[in-house]
Length: 264
Ligand SMILES: Nc1ncnc2c1ncn2[C@@H]1O[C@H](COP(=O)(O)OP(=O)(O)OP(=O)(O)O)[C@@H](O)[C@H]1O
Image (spheres, rainbow, N blue to C red):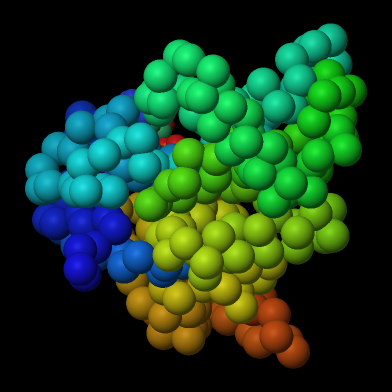
């Protein structure tokens, strides 16, 4: 069975006159790790919304997880949690099983508990699973969100800036968790990020969106001065420093007229 985990064909998304992307063809294989990059407003979150079935395409087709939406895991953009939130971590993780049907009997409840316990253990959150979420650190909360996204055994994992505001150690542990999942369970990963370096060793292909244009390819093909200069339509320099990639001259607001060094 070699069905793609995700297939976008001729996909277009526009809001009124504004085209976010058009002619997007992307097939993602099971176990593949795709980083989605681009400046603010380039349509990364909108792509997630299309894949989640929350936003219809303007043209083209999308297929995901064989049409079974329960097999999509989602890690949303991190938001600050109210300190007074008394919900426990294990309750949050359990929400990831809502919609899964094991019956309401004792056996069903037992399966549910076991799955939640396993997901908590996989992210190393067992010790704080019963504490109120509002009292946990940002990194601890993020591990719980990862557990929530993974508990339903997803075929496709959609991650919207899951590393935002995490320190380096937690960036590493959250990325490693996601990487371990795709290696052991062949989960396809779409990973929206502003910063490719923390996941660079994991990335198979990059989808880079800029003002209605895009490129798809291996990091070595897309993260070059030539490709990014074409995409941003200005002079962008990609510099490799040890195993890190520095992008110089790409405006994060996507407003190329603010940039120095425009191409003639
Ligand atoms: N429902 C909508 N109707 C009209 N415009 C929208 C809608 N949703 C998003 N947009 C616009 O589409 C553009 C892309 O938004 P989106 O959130 O997908 O960008 P993004 O790449 O995720 O940005 P960021 O990096 O800032 O999170 C934005 O300019 C946004 O204002």
